[in-house]
Image 1 (cartoon, rainbow, N blue to C red):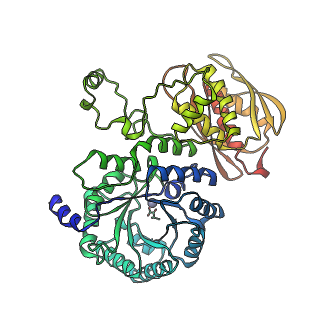
Image 2: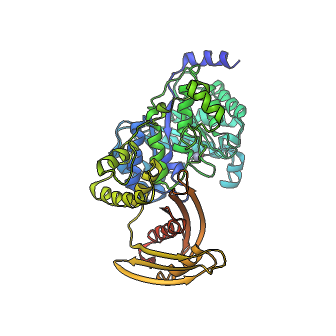
Image 3: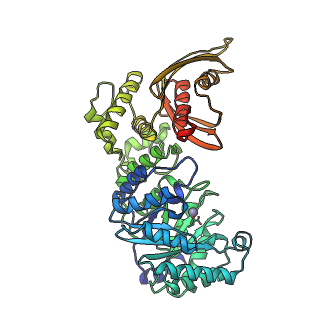
Length: 516
Ligand code: KIV
Ligand code: ZN
């Protein structure tokens, strides 16, 4: 069945699958993952070298920062199409078109909710009115010298017959890509595939290649990748994905998973432009800049994705890797380089490692990272790639008005935890002491005697970077100040110091007038 449909449809269609990356739009709108323009450019360059076809660079009308990022990304990369998101609103489309003015290849991604839930509760409207608004937005966008992609938000829960009418009207109005988002991550793979197939069979303009369908799946039920593949096998020719699967709630479909599925399953007759050997560098760059750790057992890019731990597996792999490995680690850019970074390594070795990991730094930042590297290398025998990325990420993350100069903590069973902290605030040193119900509580209470702001620790996660009691740990923290949430991270071989560093990283991100 599947084969018959595939042969019939694919013979008439392109055999290339377009990769549309939305790390910088759907991925970046996640709280705590925000990037500044310089960081976004760095990610965009990495995406270009990874071979993505389209970069969704932002939602320009949402903020001047987003607008500016789309402008700068358009200047910085030239091979991929640069795409800007809009609602079905003329002003959004004007702003998007303006933000794309330097892009060599431009795309406006406009659309509207089409499910009955969206039509009734979000728009208090009717199907007919929504269809008219969709057509008007596509026509307007098409007048802006850009290709037009139309999204039917919540298509996953939209009635297929109505969805087909909207898609056909959007194509007639000038859209050449129709995006079918499973916005809520609700669909089952069969259901999503059947939806794509229904559209392929019922919408004029799809079978003859005038327009293509795009998948855009969310991972609320852990089915984003399965749904995307089901969409592709039923005729979609563009996939909307993010690095590491970052995105709203449980995230979006992972770019690396789809790219490696195509590489491993030779029976799927589709080509793509992804240079899979760049996947690891891209994953680490995004994780580090977004302060978003990758789940250890995440497919393709998790720390354990290529680690064999059980004796039986190790034995098999030693005899022949194909026994337990379907992917050659080199195919995702995991090199087996033997450059071991220790306290005796020089700047050249560190720079080489950073560049292999996809991180480019200027001389000033390099000097700072090297200093931090030497301090950490004194405490750890060997520095891992995660350590290096964490040091680079920490350095790039903020201007540091507040710095931790010293921290002394007394704690233990039967002892009242006591901390003395020395901070440098805008060049001046201050010391304070406090007790607390634990070493971290004592340290933060002492810190609050120096930084006189109302701030509340909202969330904290601690991650060991590799193995062993000499390992550095990385702490992610969320602190509230003046109604805003700030995200920070810190690392050290001492868990309390790493936590205080993360707290201070948050303080350094407070708006200037709020800084203590
Ligand atoms: O998930 C979604 O529906 C989206 C659209 C705005 C494309 O991100
Ligand atoms: Zn989305």
